[in-house]
Length: 343
View 1 (spheres, rainbow, N blue to C red):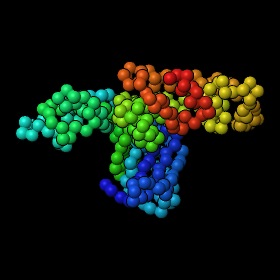
View 2: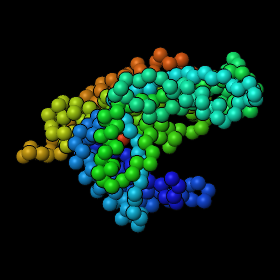
View 3: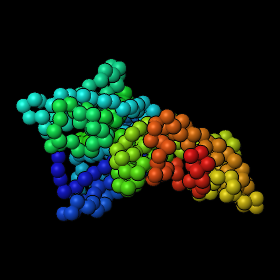
View 4: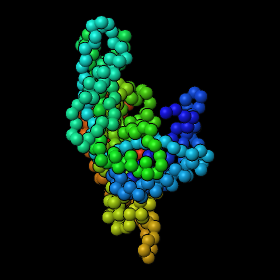
């Protein structure tokens, strides 16, 4: 489906955002509409209350449509959650003897062969992404079309998700009156937005820190080599602060956003943070080091979980582009320092 407009929506644990972009003649996109509302009914990236999520999507849609002056019927959206599983696979086909030359239909057949695996009945494939091709033993080929050979192999990266969570996710859009034109695993879309071609080529680990989950994708040679989700995000930091400071979640979230410090070494001995009043309790001041001592261990744990997931991948030790962190959870001051300590 082609249009002069492109619409995307991100249904997250903490907020739901819709963007409407107008396509330019050169392929550039100019944002003309934005709608962002607090999320309800989503936990750990999964829909747990269809009516609440549907209502929130309608509100975000109305805001974006009003700003852009257009009516939205279809959207592209991202999917995440701890139910996502990814792995690499290989497919092999014989090139017809009548031509012995790789054609476009051979690429389609070998990718289909690589993705022709047996999955549990409750799981479905979301993406099958080509990595490298091999023609008669010659490896590391990006585009084999036109090459002569008898045997074509393909290595692909496959992203799968559980059927029921995905079906519930799609259902909220249908109830909101929106057609889902494209569904993409979120860190793949994020990588397109924040990584350069050089970073994807030389090797880079992207970590997208959301509210409910942290997703990641490792690139090398211009394509994803591994990806996944760990079930921890910004809300875990908020919960830790709420318990440690003995305050409601809303107050803990405010402290985290305004004065959060993820790296204890950045908190001076004399630095203080104001905790807003609540429930008849007066405003108080606490030392920044106390907040940092609560936040840093949780952030270190999240990065360690990602590192443990990717450490076995052979490309992890050759990341010329390093590690890139993004997402709302990465906005805490000193987060990059914690990542440096872990990686």
